[in-house]
Length: 170
Image 1 (cartoon, one colour):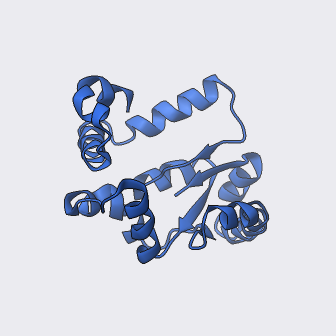
Image 2 (cartoon, one colour; image 1 turned 90 degrees about the vertical axis):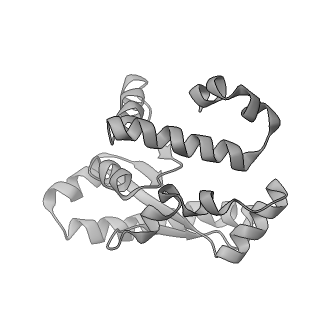
């Protein structure tokens, strides 16, 4: 994002969220065309260098990102929201709906299209206060269930989730 702000200072100064998102999507696509895991690897290096734990990765949008982080012991948490609620919140926040180009970008649809991925799922249809109130208990209980599901898959995966208390919010 900092690179985009330097390269497109005029767009980032205006506050047009749709234009910013389009630029960030295109820049991300360009960098991932050179190395599909460029952002993931950089993030893991930073986590390890700063010895951060526990870690919440607040934005995983691609199935390959899901695979990357889950294979490293992160527990995937998916914040779910109905489209009507999501669009109403975007309209309130931005004053307009996202462009069709933005909504159709792979980063907005890839993780949803991937089938068979296990998630700890948290409902966000009733506002931030309700989400905040219920999240800690909900996630704790669902992580226990997630670990049980995962431990049935392989001994290695079960070991990874016991060794790391990290979350990837998707």
